[in-house]
Length: 138
Length: 138
DNA sequence: ACCATTTTAGTACTTTAGTATGAGGCCTAA
DNA sequence: TTAGGCCTCATACTAAAGTACTAAAATGGT
Image (cartoon, rainbow over all chains, first blue to last red):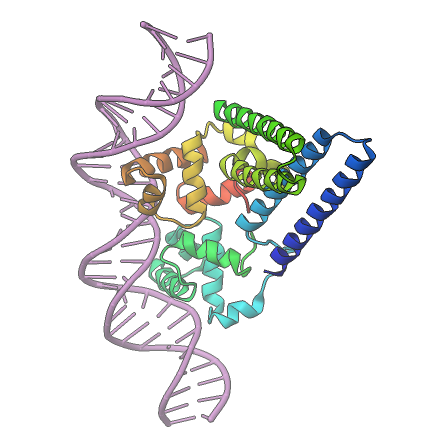
């Protein structure tokens, strides 16, 4: 949110600077208007690219900093979290059961609880949400 | 491929038209240079947005470091890749079909092909592999 | 125009995933 | 001791996901 404001501020400032530069150089007559137009076009093309990417991607602050508090905040238990991690590794319920030495039924229970707590309908959606919440490494 | 060429052609033509319009109106003196600059800025901002959205897979490689060559190397087609991206967003086959305007059957076909090409047994595993191969954003 | 690939879509199945519910054992705080 | 989580497991479902074909268009390059 704050980033967007900053970006737009920078954008407006850039516009003003370009305009002032254009005015001066035109009066001085040492720079063509073509160059001015090309510069503006290029700058805003880049800004458009940049803005679009920043808005479409989740802001990945990263540094491997997982938000442990958020896990507790969501009421996700230790065992459930272990299952979540294994899901992110692409394992099936059966495989997770074998890895954690529990039955497939137990895994299913954990997965069901996870889906509720992460407000997801599928395990893939749970993964996406968990990554956005920064509770599992991406 | 051809789309990119067309888009860039349109871009160049737009630039030329804007330049011509700017020249005329400046000579005629009935339009301010401020308006011209604002127009150009706006147009190229939009073009930047549009380009980044449409050709995201060709343009994201500088920022996100996606390995485009590896996608082709694995023989993953354009449509299959689109499906893969939607899977990573946690959508079901049905939802992907609705989003891409194809039937669920078609999505299943694409997914099956993806699983073979990514050497995965499940969509979650495909996701994990795709991320390791850097063909989808983390 | 021709050939190769891609995209689309279907049927018929098998396999996972996920839901709902109940229940026993374990541990901890009141 | 009792109430409340948590972990475990089971049964019986329903719902997705995935497989294995077949096949018709459309797309694209030579």
